[in-house]
Image (cartoon, rainbow, N blue to C red; front, side, top):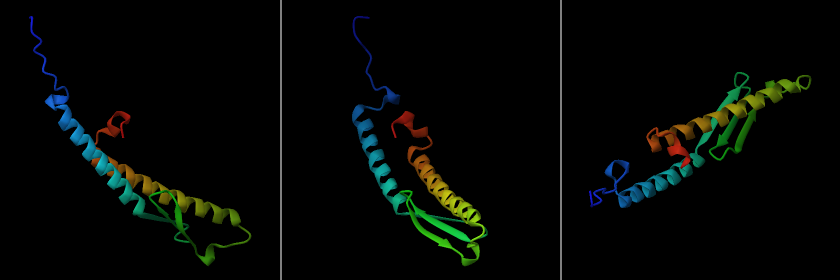
Length: 116
């Protein structure tokens, strides 16, 4: 028992250099994925297509189309509701795409305990 026979390795025998290399690759992949997502656009409509909103991966509204038939001066609240619904749905699509990409990148590791 006089000798320390522990050889480290931890993490299933993966040495530190290999872990660092894997972490650096994952970081590069994450940066590329984020850049790709920011370039994407996500479109949704409400009111049977009366209002269409497009957002980008940065959660910026890039386009808003309102059909003339949706403009009723006596019912502005309905138009406001349709605009909010379309924008929120487009943002949800952007978030969903981001979550799917992250899941593919991490292999379903759930964000690596907050590391990503």
